[in-house]
Image (tube, rainbow, N blue to C red; front, side, top):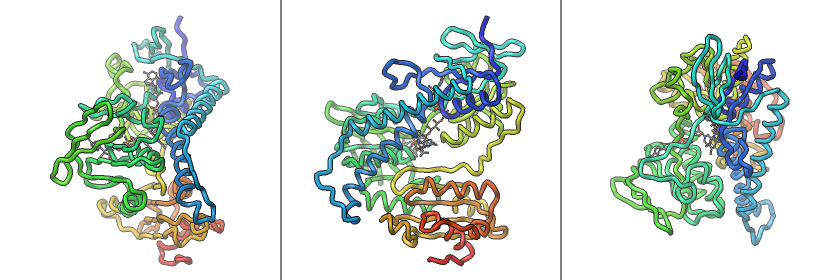
Length: 474
Ligand code: FAD
Ligand code: NAI
């Protein structure tokens, strides 16, 4: 007889493993299916999905190591610290990253035990349905579930004619494990991965050229932030970013990769030692048996869901990168919690209006809510409060005054509509803005809250004050 569960989750990334844990906490019987071993030396499946194995966590580990190296080489001197004969051991850096990944992925195994989640290693796909249960095949064995949560995530999009081998031409997988900093690194796509991983290898000595198809840099960010970021990345840090690029052909020889492209109405070539292709990601919907049970996909090939992540099939849900919305780990996790709670009869929900974005470059870029250009397009009247970190005592003490905090508030109600930060620790500072917006706070509400001194959070406080033109330190 096949095993029966209240909930079967397909995929153990942030959307799936969190849904499984929450379902376990709520007393449901739950199994989670995962097919990938990632880099496990024994070939056992690893939990955590793209995020832990090939995404958020390893990239942030490398960003931290390379940032420290960069600071030691360039910023220590202003503090009176000399750092002659500085050397980078890339293998040690990559080992550290791998150890963090191992620690976290095995931590999720521990959480599965704690919350009684049954791990089913293998590939999961729909094979049919009885009256009350969905039937899922896991490598030849059928399990049955009252509810199924599809959390199969996404994979890197590749471009026709550019064969990714993850040695010389790489997507995120290869780009997280170079054995040494390439002398010349080419990157196709100036999105989040291009900028984060381009920064890592630039700091370690690579000459980096980023080729972007769009005419605008960081089009999704507030344009004031994008402008500041452009200035810092291209002028101060020396990232060579080209916009409006049309890639024509990529060829690989034993020694290098040649990228032929058009920009500014002329044909050009870029010769590099390694090439990263980071042009977005595509949802994993092709091997889940969607066609067997008529699971509906949308026009972009994602699983079609409503605001509660319900699909067109009864008791079948989908969360994370495999559905609409930003491909962000924390968005998938929130959806996982919501779905598990709704299965248990609770009223879980996700407020899609206040999902923060963070780009972990230096300076970091973080935002929540609307950009100024969105407010203009939507005809919403707003007031702006903007404070540079140069006016913040803590930033000065840290020797890092790049960037600013910008607050957008409704002109009539003063409700905060968007907060945009470019600067040191923007990833942490944005949390206060998220809380404020979740509770519908006005700029006045936050302006009247005491912020510790001296902290970077005072810049956010001052920006709130600046909305009503009464900042105290600028
Ligand atoms: P995934 O993490 O992709 O997990 C899906 C899992 O399902 C995988 O393990 C896969 O093996 C498994 N699976 C697929 N099909 C099946 C099947 N049929 N049977 C069994 N198992 C299956 N987001 C952030 O919020 N912050 C960041 O800093 C960040 N950095 C990133 C850096 C990089 C380089 C990349 C590539 C992504 C980054 N992301 C970041 C995005 C983040 O990784 C994803 O949004 C997140 O992992 C999506 O979670 P998920 O659970 O939907 O899918
Ligand atoms: P992206 O969508 O962020 O950026 C892709 C870029 O490639 C875009 O600017 C696009 O215009 C460009 N592009 C597309 N086709 C091109 C072509 N043919 N030639 C040149 N440029 C082209 O995608 P990316 O960087 O691959 O990251 C994928 C996703 O992973 C992100 O959208 C994000 O959801 C997630 N991620 C999140 C991170 C974070 O939260 N800090 C970090 C890294 C990834």
